[in-house]
Structure formats: C-alpha cells, structure tokens
Image (cartoon, rainbow, N blue to C red; front, side, top):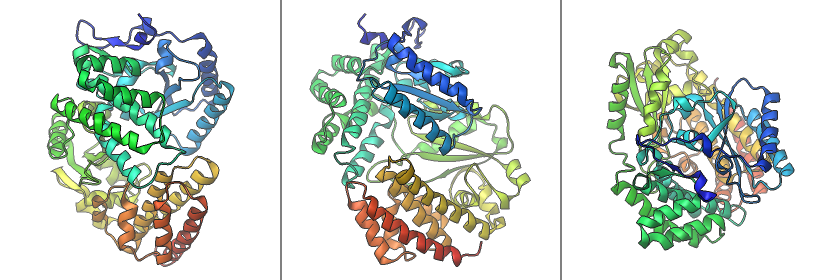
Length: 503
C-alpha cells in the first residue's frame, strides 16, 4: 500500500464505511504541534467547546512538509463569540510562525446540534480523530458509498455559480485569485471521486486518489480532470483558465451527478420534501407551523445559497434536534431552525428574541411562506412593539458598522465581499426603519446581491454616497480609503435617521 492509499477507506462487507484505527498514523514531526494546540485549549478551558477533531492527511500519516495544512473541527455547544474566535485564530497564527513547515492552520467551527444533521459530519466519521473533549462519532451514522458521500458534489453547482458571479463583480485580483483557484479545484477533483464512490466502494479526500479513481471510469474526461488537479496543486491567477475548467469538467460533474441521482438540485419540490420529512419525524399535533423564509427566486441562474426553514413546535422535547439529523440525507443545502410556542408566549411576544435575532425576525417570519399549519407569527405580529422593532434594527446597524471597522482595522484581513454584505444589510435595515421597504420584501433579495438591489430604489442616502458605494463595488480590490469615506457619510446619515426614529 502506497503512502497516499493509507487515506483511502474501503467499503466493508455490510456495505458501510468505517475508519479503522489501524489507519491512524500521526507522523512524529507533527505530534509537538498537536500537543501545543491541546495545551492551549486546556488552558483556555472554554466550557462552550464540546470537542476538537484533527482531520485530513495528518491523521493518516500522509502529511507533507511545506505542502500540508493542519485541519481542525471545533464542535461547540452554542456559537462561539467573535472574541473567542479571534483569540483562537491569533494563537493558531502564532503556532504557524513557530511551525513554519505547516502551510496553514485551518479551523472549521460547528455547533453540536447542527453538525449532527449536516453532510459534513461524514468528515468527522471517516477522516478525523478526537483530540479534545467528548467524541461524537457514535452519534453519526455509518455512511455508505454514494449519496452519503456527496459532500463536495452537492454544493458544486451553487459554488461554481457563486464564483462566476463574484468574478463578474470584480472581486478577484492577484491577491486572492490563487486561493480561490485552490479551493474550487479541490472541490471539483473530490466531486470526481464522489461520482464513482459507489462503484469503487471507497472514500478518500486525497486528491491524487480521487483523480485516479475517477479516470478509471471516465477516460474521456481524464485530461479535463487532470487540469483541475494541476490547478489545485499549482494555482493560477488567470481567471479565464479557471472558468475554462468550470466549462470543461465542473458543469459536467453536476449534470452527471443529477443523471446518477446522486444530487437533486431542484427548488421545485423542496417544499414538498420538507413537509413530508417534518411530518414523518414529528407528531403533527406538535407542529404549529413550518415556514420557509429567505430568497425564493433563482439568483443569476442558480439556486439560493441556503434553503431556510423555521419549524415552530408546541414545546421543547429533548430529542428534537436529534430528529433533525435526517436532513443530512437531503441533496440540498438546507438549514432548519426550531422555535417553541410555549417559550415565545411565556416570555411575551413583545420580548421575542431568538439567539441574536430580535423582534424584526418575528416580522420576517410573519411574511414567510407557510408550508404546513397556520403561521403563528402572522397571527400575532400585531402584538409586536414597533418601537422595539426599530430599536432592534438600529442595533443591528450599529453591529454591522462595528463588524466593518473590526474587519478592516483590527483583523487586518478584510474580505471585500463580506464588507459588501454588511453594507447591504446596513442599507436594508435602515430602509425597513424608514418604511422604504417592508419585511415581506426581504424574501425577494439574495443576501449576496442585496446591495445592488437597494441602491436602485433607496432615497435615504445621498446621491453622493450611492455613487461612492457603486465605485467601491466596481473595484477589483478593497479600497480602504474609499471605504472610510463611505462609512463616514453613511454613519452620519444613520445618525439622522436614528434621531428622527421613535424607539
């Protein structure tokens, strides 16, 4: 067995895939790194961190100095605060300087209840070892080759479309194109293995093996896939080359996945699927309503990034979140959130709060599409305090201003697309406060494109500020000076709106 084949897991006699303990083989040179990571988290003693997993090539003893990342999953009981994430990332950055032979420290954060119902939990089951806290592998079902493994393939269509749109908007330049190239090409190569996993009876994340296994079945696409593999290892800044791979192999993989019934990227039947799943899992007498909120329409020819649903139940039962684990079997990126009627009533509708969401979220749910039951939020929205809604929205605006400031000044690592998203949300929340748009209008916008939609219709900001924002979005790189001018003008106009708003 070659070094690379150590990371390949084959189907057992019962048809499932298991990660044998014999495959775990952490190389000596990486053990001090892991000890340093463990030492940090033991000292941190954050009670919110449930468990930490080391994953990827290092687990199987196939790490390569100067090429391999060190990858972790951090499982938490509830979302970590921004402060906690920054502290963890800062320590990882310091370790990266100490252990210079590691390309980077890559961390994925998941909340316990959510990861149990996500496709990504296959990576915990088959490619990871628990190095801190309680191991949750026994709570994750044993996967089979085929649909269970379509981690990359199920997201590929949306990610290619999203990347194309970002290219059109000029979000990539010499500073970030290669990073995008590596990420999307890895996704394409691994999708190739997922296409043939049921025929090969195996699973791996090793790019070379993914290419070899795929090429055995699709000789006519071997050269196209080899191009993707080459770009994953030696990325380019040439956007046309990247888009050429999308055309030659990326889109074909999506079509082949649909032909083989491995993925089902259709929005037309998702509502029906959700109703059937929810009513089969939960007693119908417990379900007050099932709502779908967020963008309903296709965006630039693609599906929404997420399909968001709200399930309102009568009262809490301790196995509710475990029941939702069935949604990992769906071929769509679905997010299902749970609310409880008795808790809403006991706290008072005027005081509605769901995590970081305030009463404005109640209003969004009131205008959401009702798939099952009666929309409790619609029936009770007249009990909300409009002043509190405005207060919640203005608080969110302050938070988005702060996030932009932190992203640019404190972190030193700012994402132009992330800042555009925050600018879009500042504008929409201010338009909700002033009444320029209504809550039901929010279902017509895709969050990544909302800034362009609202600029066409808003009168709450000056023409000069609009032009500055248009100039900012048209640039291929992040212009800090221009952003500072935008924030200065926008914040001044926000203060005027706040002064004239009753809260």
